[in-house]
Image (cartoon, rainbow, N blue to C red; front, side):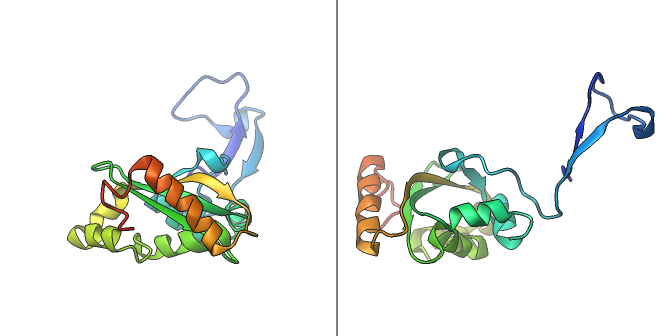
Length: 166
């Protein structure tokens, strides 16, 4: 689905076009498992399904893997059902990709409050959106990254709205 990109010069929209009657160029054939183009760090707003797809197929989404593993980050998970927020951070060898791989497995990444939401209703996982608040160099220590995370928790009030415990 959505894997062939064709240049449609001079053709209006239509439900069915006989391909061999037009001289259209196939610009790109995207690999099976491809989720979407990388939009830039601060434009990321992934659904759980998209996050899973990116993590599940590293070959089809190689750009995502390369870019997300090259940085640490402070990220935000928003429950679109009620607007609750969870601010987290990622550091270490695999950077942000390593942390988001944990969320792709179970949706909660071992966060107590997110786990409670999912345990109460497993479909709740599909209301989560994953975004980046700030990218950070992977050379920062875990303590330096946590200090940046704390700043965003205070700015966004994620402790007050109870998906962050500390």
